[in-house]
View 1: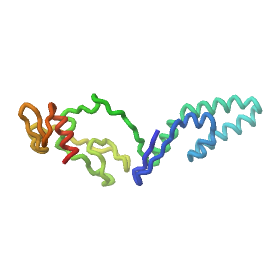
View 2: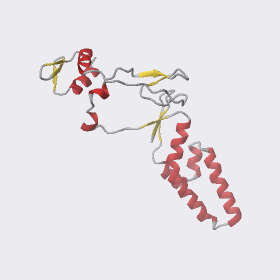
View 3: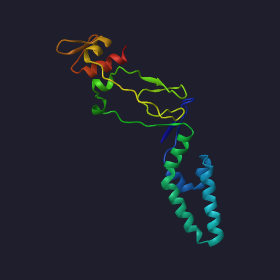
View 4: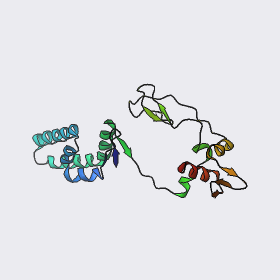
Amino acid sequence: MKFKNPANGHTEDCSAPWLWVLFFGALYLLVAGLWAHVIIYLLIGIVSFASMGPPATVIMILVNLIYAMFAGQIVRNSYMRKGWIEVTHKPITSTSTSISTSESISSAPENKKCPFCAELVKAEAIKCKHCGSELPLIEVKPVEDDDVMEKYGITFDGAYHFGEYQYSKLEDAIRYAKKHR
């Protein structure tokens, strides 16, 4: 898991929190700044050892295993509550890069202002990442191929042309034109 602070661009990598909790227990939670979970962990330990004595070791091993199972979600929730964004890397494949004209080009703007906090968010967003408010939906209508071709200076004579390059698909010509405008 990797998280990015949108305020300053700082990223933090939290690899395998389940493994760290499994080996170090509450010590990892303490270092990660998850104080509430450290207190819960210690309270369970103190109460179980006070009431059962040495057999409470089995209970603490179970508590450690349970915390290890949920460590990833606990860490993710902690960062998300602080306003950080989870960074995901999706591998680029030939099928995932082919996009239709109606999806890639639309008459709607790329960003819009949140009506509650006035911060810029993506046009497709349904919830503001700054204030958490639900955003009104905007209808996105596809633009006709001729309008798109005119916008990017793409011509067609059996193949799509942008500059000195020739493409068999309009989407490829648009993708290249966007990068080199």
